[in-house]
Amino acid sequence: MCCNSTRIEWLTWKERDPTLNKSRGHIHISSGTREMATILDTALLQAQFHTGQSSAVLDLLKGLNYCDIKICEEFLQERNYYSALLELYKCNEMHREALKLLNQLVEESNSGQVHSESAERCRPEMIIEYLKPLCSIDPMFVLEYSMHVLESCPTQTIELFLNGNIPADLVNSYLKQNAPKMQATYLELMLSMNESAVSANLQNELVLIYLSEVVDWYMDLIAQQSWDEKAYSPTRKKLLSALEGMSGYNPEALLKRLPADALYEEQAILFGKMSQHQLALSLYIHKLHVPELAISYCDRVYEVGQHHPSSKSYGNIYQTLLQIYLNSSRVTKEFVSQIKNHASPQQTGSEKLGAAKAKVGRVS
Image 1 (tube, one colour):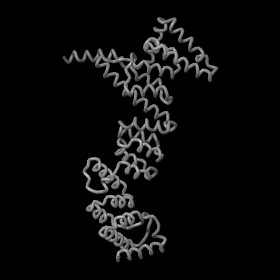
Image 2 (image 1 turned 180 degrees about the vertical axis):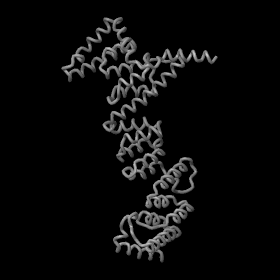
Image 3 (image 1 turned 135 degrees about the vertical axis):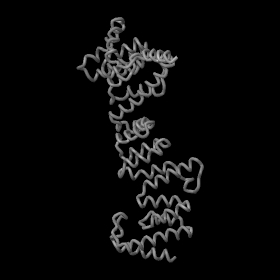
Image 4 (image 1 turned 45 degrees about the horizontal axis):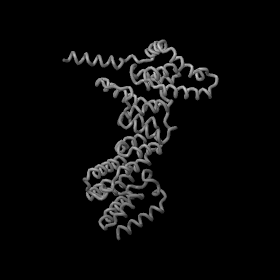
């Protein structure tokens, strides 16, 4: 009762003195007054805990207080009162310590090594909630500590980035350096949540991620002599969809990354983006042998041409298709010549396979 009575007198004094009602970081009071406030608040916290008033401890820490950080930290740690310890860190802007504690509690909760009631209730979402108000204050700090929950709660973490107005290029760059496996997840979720927020640069990043994975997959199958042009991995399906639906990437640069004698469907889409209609249709007819795709391509080009009547290339697209069929040998020669001009200087799949066999022979 004595502590509570003294605390009430101290609170009344604070209310009378306007300089004491400012935020903790800007209060200018004498050392003697601060010392008395620290003794009172620290003693009150301990007394409330010993008398079973745990909710009162939280109320004390959530309001303006002068609890001695070191003494109260040791007191609360010894008693595993982590919810109060988190409030102590939070009210003193010790965010790094608070988040380290939260991560520890989440790990203990996930592993089943629970040492307190607080740890049992601790979920990854609590880290996200803690980070929300810090987005506008220190976005780099938020990015650093969101890595702990990005994999377990990807959607909520992406929402944190979006709602916190953290620049998308900054998020993408940070993930690229520190969590590259999650970069595509971030860009995909961002695209599904707010397509207009995905800049041309980020679209290009996502397409490059897909393309790199698809080319690696293709090279593995070539080495096993099991490549099939009509094989579609999940990432290849994503790549084709992105190439069709996005417009922010550089098709000419992507073509240079593709093998010259494979991934013809990707090549056809890219040539189409460059308005190289003869090359795109030649791929559909002579390499993929899917005339339905060629006709669909012509339909799309013609539809676009209805909005651009000044351009003759759109209206002549069906004539181009007919010429490819009627002059198959000549068109094929032109096609091969032009493909070499657009192809990358890297080896074709068959050349790489031959090199691999030669290397194996030398090793043997």
